[in-house]
Amino acid sequence: MSVAPVVSTVSVKAKPGRAFELFVNHMVRWWTTCNFSENPPVAIVVEPKAGGRWYERDARGHESEWGIVLSYEPPHRLLLGWKFDADFKYDPDILTEVELSFKANAAGGTDVRLEHRNLERFGVDAARVASRIGGGWPTLMNSFATHADQYENQEV
Image 1: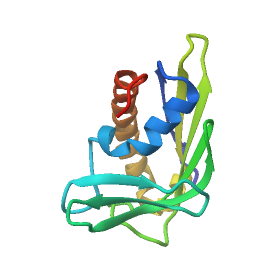
Image 2: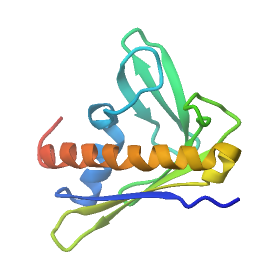
Image 3: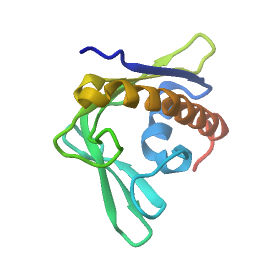
Image 4: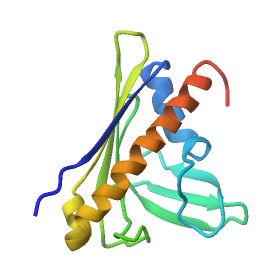
């Protein structure tokens, strides 16, 4: 069974390098719709290297894994391995891919495209998961765009 990837695109005022940096290093500020541990995160970390971890940390220092960094290519591309099951619980045996591209646009900003693919790996739950994340990613990407436009030229 093949399941179409979920794609979401936003445009931000920041140039690609700044957009990439705001996406990766300030994720905890704009990731507002869901978290994966019992307590709210104080940090969402994307380690800046292929093979790095992708995780959240709460105020007590508890870390909850999200996945891995498959490719880290600033300022143009980030490929993350999402390791959640169909119920959004961490599962090291499941891996879908979240690819982000950051491309300069004619307005002097950046078009940021997210593609979450390999959803057929959820098996019989693939369509349900695709529907759920198909609503979630656009919300998160819009939240990122608002954050990026607010802090385009400011230190955060």
